[in-house]
Length: 146
Image (cartoon, rainbow, N blue to C red; front, top):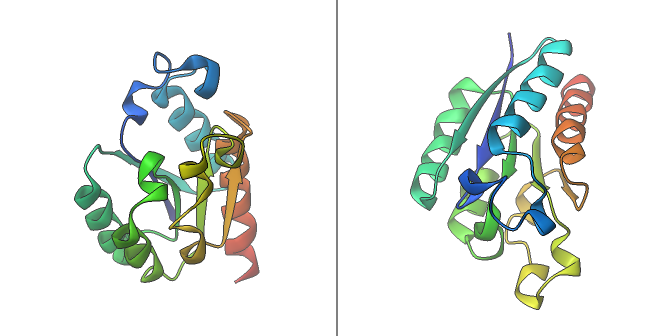
């Protein structure tokens, strides 16, 4: 069974309580469960890693080169600052989807830049919890087209 690696960056462990007016009231566990269920319907497994540390996410991308067919990443604020994470993603040859619950382009100016954009196949932003399901759908479609 092919695996999707879902990566969650800094502070996403606080979803459900952190700024619910921006990120919604669903917890990270609820988002992961929904994504895993959607993946299972398509015959894929989903493995999740959340870390508040950039290096953990980079190491997970490196390891995914041997274990995963695709990556979905919600890098949190690292989206706007981590060239190292972008470089790691560029080494992964399967489908890669960048995901954001909120719409960074509609927020503070520093959030308008994604260092990851050039290393991923596409980005989903501003769709809240629906974004997790659509990210899985995008991975399924991209895997089918390769």
